[in-house]
Amino acid sequence: MFALSVCAALGLAPRISHTMSNLRNDLDGICHSFNGKMGYYVKNLKTGETIGFQQDEQFPSASTIKTAIMLEVFKQIEEGKLNWTDKLLAPPAGKRYDSIWLSFMQDKVSVNIDGLVNMMINVSDNTAAVMLSDKVGVENIEKRLNELGLSQTACLIHVPASNARLTKLRAIFQNMGATSPADMGHLLELIYQKKVASTSGCEKMLRILSHQYWDDHFASQIPPGICVCSKSGALERSRSDTAIVFGQTPYIVAAYTADDKDITWTASTEAHVALRRIGHDVWNALDSGMRYEAPKDAERWYPTGGGVEVGS
Image 1: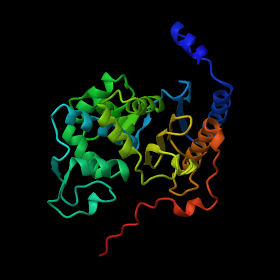
Image 2 (image 1 turned 90 degrees about the vertical axis):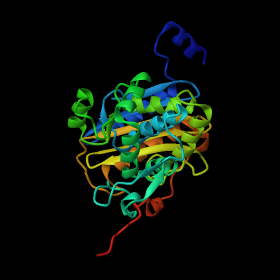
Image 3 (image 1 turned 180 degrees about the vertical axis):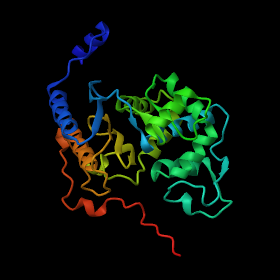
Image 4 (image 1 turned 180 degrees about the horizontal axis):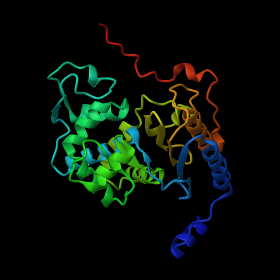
């Protein structure tokens, strides 16, 4: 810790411990061997050490941008612009986005912001994300992120044609958002440190992030008794996961892929395997006193998306 403090005082990069150096070599190897583009960011919250690979490069955010949408919702509630109990009318059937729940609700159904935030984060409901981002405004989300110094991150849902930056990013990334591993790691750290909203607001965001249905990447490689606050994302050619892990050594990890060669949707998809390897290696390096190996048959219980089918 003394060495880290001296480096900070001198404005120098902190010396990386043997553990973090070895971990960096392992994770860099995963990224180098990936058939596509892959980057990661890891921060040991006990020592302040960070490692990364292409951590400042922009990637498609997919659903991980929902953490930023959630933050803007909380901030506007704390600023008196919204209420937790305000209700929003769901779009009519046929004009909704792929969702586990909201796509199948009856027309003229209203859901309050509490329910929408939890659906957006817990089961990654896309219709809920669109409803909330439309309500708070993507340009307000952008302004908030810029104020936090998260310049690589942007919400790209229903971008106004007048916003040149967001319009350009939308054309490039063609999904809900863009971010970098380091940016999303910093956002999670601000929530963890309770610096980005009130203490109660940050704690509620952490509670919501800890209730994940999609738990087959990082969380699957961590003992079930450990709190994991996470948000994953998935597109055909991009998969990602981001998490705060509250082990004996708390840490933040964020990993993203792009231009994936393997675009399948199975447990053995290359990006899914790579994300689980990162989750496994980080946990066992930083919490080596609680080493964990997932059961060999864990895959049989991975989330399926609910298997919803609408009859004719």
